[in-house]
Amino acid sequence: MQHKPLSLAQVLACGAAIVTLSMGIRHGFGLWLQPITQAQNWGREDFALAMAVQNLSWGFFGIFAGMLADRFGAFRVIAAGAVIYALGLWGMAHASHVLPFILSTGVLIGLAQSGTTYAVVYGVIGRNVPPERRSWAMGVAAAAGSFGQFLMVPTEGMLISQFGWQEALMILAAAALIMAPLALGLREPALGLANAHREQTIIQALREAFGYRSFQLLMAGYFVCGFQVVFIGVHMPSYLKDHGLAPQVASFALALIGLFNVFGTYAAGALGQKLAKKKILAFIYFSRSVCIVLFLLAPLTPTSVYLFSAVMGLLWLSTVPPTTASVAQIFGVAHLSMLGGFVFFSHQIGSFMGVWLGGYLYDKTGSYDIVWYLAIALGVFAALVNLPVNESAIRRTQLQAA
Image (cartoon, rainbow, N blue to C red; front, side, top):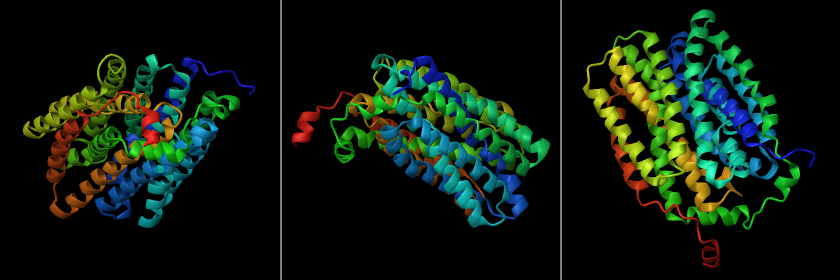
């Protein structure tokens, strides 16, 4: 009531900074796989299971974080998420047994991410940015998360080498708290939220979305996105080290993914204003499969790793703006954070499978080959299922009458 309407610059600046911190911290977790498992005498599957639970927790709680943000605004959700993020990182640093490690690294950090990343921030963007600029604005926010990866992953590698893995996590816990004051910039007017145009209840919105074929197809494609990027993000550092490459190669590789993803996500958001979003998504998924095939066929050298990382970076989170913008275009923005949370939950089920299968099959076979082949096949599948998506605004009166 006392708050002024949010300006585009304010929404993008604060939203981008929050996503930069939240996504930047999580993108570096793969760097802790070997230090933690070696210090605690755990298998890679133990660490991978905690990361898998984190992704599933992030997706599951994201549904409810989206509901709360749609109803009460993003500020409270993000501020609470920042505190929980810090607590989860503290637990990750001090857990000496697998179960507390899973609860802190998996459940707590996943819960924190649900309130500090795309679904909640995109809800604010959707409500405060006009439709003709919405896809572009979402691309800017996604690019910020990518810049966070470019900025934070080498920083996290440096922190581990300078201070040790436990102290590095404590420094990140302090950094996570910065998201709470940043959330003030996304504090929407209470009156505007209370009077938001909602011609549907939550149940009606969910029934409509889950009964709509295009929503199901978007969820299927997003499952594949999660499988691919989290498997690569968590397991590639160990994959490279297993093949005799220096640890710095992995840090630079993840940083390159983040750097090039700045351009990829921005381009995807901007192109989403001009081209059919389903065609953009199909291109991204198919290109990922081609990129992985070429990476596996080429000799494994630092140069080939950096080329793979640059190309994959262009395709990394570039699925996020067209997917979320498609949901907004089809269903409107009244329940955008919630519906985006459900689509993202599908992404996180894929993330769970990718990161857990990576650890499980490595421990069973001593190789990541099977998971690489699955990532290729799933990319082709995702490209095909996105092509039939109907991006037109839904005819709500007919559907509700049905």
